[in-house]
Length: 253
Length: 262
Image (cartoon, rainbow over all chains, first blue to last red; front, side, top):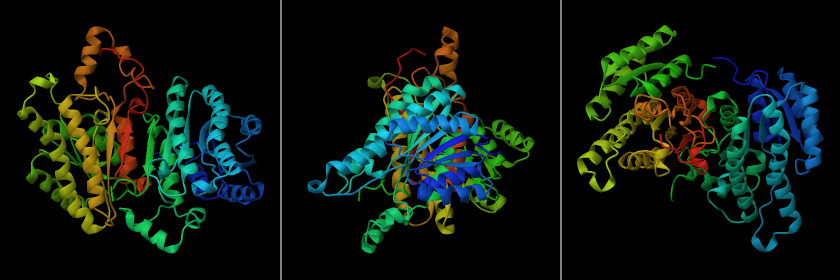
């Protein structure tokens, strides 16, 4: 079987590290051309260089996805740079803080929602016309098990990620006539430095023990799900939330 | 992409439709496939198609609802192909559209045997081999009818909801063994089982409206389910466990576009 994303221009936000970078690597390995977006130019440069060193057609775009005008300008630039419209969009960028209710402040919530939820509206708005011009496309939104099952200090984060699920379904139904598929991935606990750093060793051990597969996931195990949803292999999957959590959320206790 | 090279799979209900398409897909990705079905001519035809495409397969006539048959299928896969990495429990029946108040226990028992007991047997016998070897992927065919009303017969819908639950409970029971269990929920797919829907629509001249209740506005093809099965069978789904995955054109995630008589 051939490469599933051969020649397709793929935009991945939050692509400088962790899950986003793993998705960029996997898409590149499947023949995709990568527009890597990250708010930090410093973080982005080495990531894009590493992708290019693997022979992947990759470019970096240091843009804050919470700023609609910047996002539109970036998508225009991407189409010019790659001389092709965008076919795949992965909304992975997120900025999050976990605070008890009394400590939640306006600045934190504004920034979280600007990047992690409103940003999805701006990227979709900019990407959809390009996808329509090429006869269709695939959008993949990164969600979280926090949208399904709650834990403490996650009032803002759970609301944000539940919002991503609602957005995914609404966009799926609205963009279907343009042959754009919109689906979400719901990762459980993935062992990226950013996610592991939030918890102490005892909490991490308890978490792992709760998972039927008995371990945290790897970024590559989310990237492989993203590759499925980006490719024609998922041509009849629309508006779905694909949970990849090792079975963490299936048990009552 | 050959994600299943060196792996062995059992597929039930593999004489036609989704099972046949999946046998072809698994084999194309490098797996050896034991094609299980109740009719020899159908299973043999699937095997011939796999072989014609350059794949490896063997046919076995067996009933997925009979315990001894499922045990034999697993044993034969291990003996003939050297192991069992994937079990796709796909055979099912639709149940009757008798009005609810007139349905009988006998009908319900038949549907549950075909749709639920078959999955239990798959989990039991594939699970024995897979938990011992510390890896494996079990895939159970459910349906979007398990999630919403009016997606199939009443007994069918209930039996498929049981499959979703078995998926969770079996995945949980296999805690720490490395064995994954997932359910695949097709929407309206053009197969032998749904032939009546398509024939009726053709007779009424409403064929073009099939699938119009889902956002993609079309019925699915068996190959589109096979692609999900191949994903779940492969290491690409290595962190996907206990899930019920809809492949339905979006019908279960949106309000119906309109209710059109098929």
